[in-house]
Length: 112
Length: 112
Image (tube, rainbow over the protein chains, first blue to last red):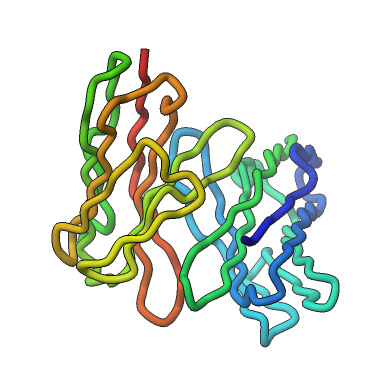
């Protein structure tokens, strides 16, 4: 089955700096890669996703890049703000089965 | 439009007791999922249902059973709870053709 590794497990940045979280996956059949943000005590919420026919996708301060050859994808957050502090999860899916395999999460702390 | 709802929000059980976690969605989604979330381990798929009348095992199905009662409802049953099942349980549903998953608010279960 699919295996997703996520790094780093914790990340602290100064407000206004950029943050990058990286994930690798093992199943070359995976073709859907979402990122979820989870605030303390809340449900995971989708913030951005990318499919394997696209190399990069941006939504305001958030971008995701995908390298299919190397089987890794990354989340980039620019101009970080304190409200960006949360746990971020990457995931991968082979699509047809519609199952998501999640990474272990990154605790992002934005220091004011 | 409530999205994905779960009951109860919190539950404490003794070892060996049974209980059913309820999940419902009002978004007319075909696919529904049950995950458990443990510290440092991300979300792990327990069972999923691609459509009404079908269920399949995920990564960690042992000790659980599910019922897809109708298109809206997907329940998770613990027949004989064990301390290892102490976790936060999330239900999710996904849109047809997009794989985007929407999560419920979660049930925090403690087994003593």
